[in-house]
Length: 112
Image (tube, rainbow, N blue to C red; front, side):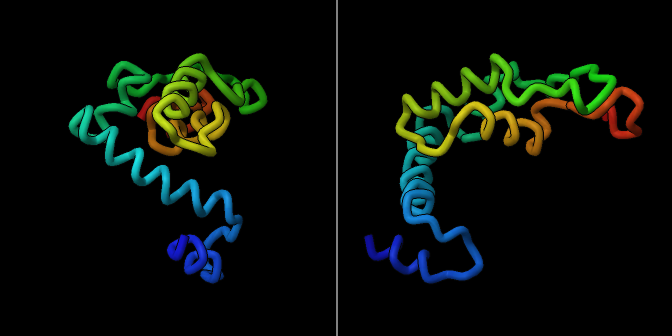
């Protein structure tokens, strides 16, 4: 509780009490995942079979907000006690971590 109050006073972060509390809780859950799988990396990449999934979208308008993989990730994270890990958030994480390549096929970053 003391950590939550301290962090709520930090102007440099999101100051939503539930999100701050969930960040602390999620860190504890992450430690349990590391214990079980050896690393969070090993666990999280399992949702895409250990390799980046390269999609072939012609337009960013075709990009989905969620996928079966992000649905599975969200469901498993929630089962483990993680919070604020909906399927859309999970898919955004997958994109930012390079687990999926959603660059348009005409983009110079596509497939790299």
